[in-house]
Length: 187
Image (cartoon, rainbow, N blue to C red):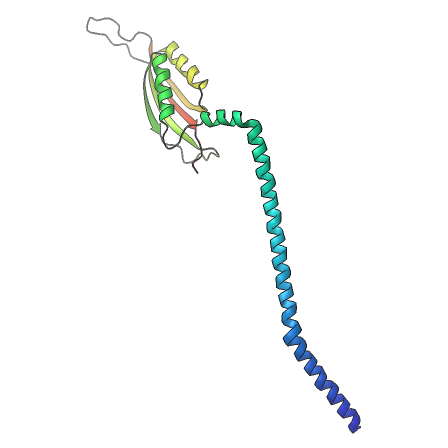
């Protein structure tokens, strides 16, 4: 019996030593292998994302090469949000061509309206005969800029007499126009 106790004690001693060796040597190796596996999985996901971005960039380059002329036209149709001087010059030129008196004011954008496209709002006040005013509207609608007429009010101007007593503003109308000109996104 004493022999069996010695053997049991020796087996127990070597089992404890084996568990200590497994716990101190093999345990950290298993955790390190798990960390390396997680790192490899993350790198594979990053590679997939980069491959997807590369494919999209290639598709965009092909699209741009195929549609570059149309994109350039679209770029010209959008107003510079920071400095809409070209657009204002266009409006002034059209009002001169149509022989209407005009004034342009920046209009605040409504806060309730959330648009996915950036835009600049303007208030335009025109005074002239009705046909010239309609000619102005047709020209800005068919002009090179992408615009939306938001509101249009037409009023008949009161007739006034000049110094000699003649009717000074026969057939004159006053147009109050709110427009939204779509703009380039600022990066």
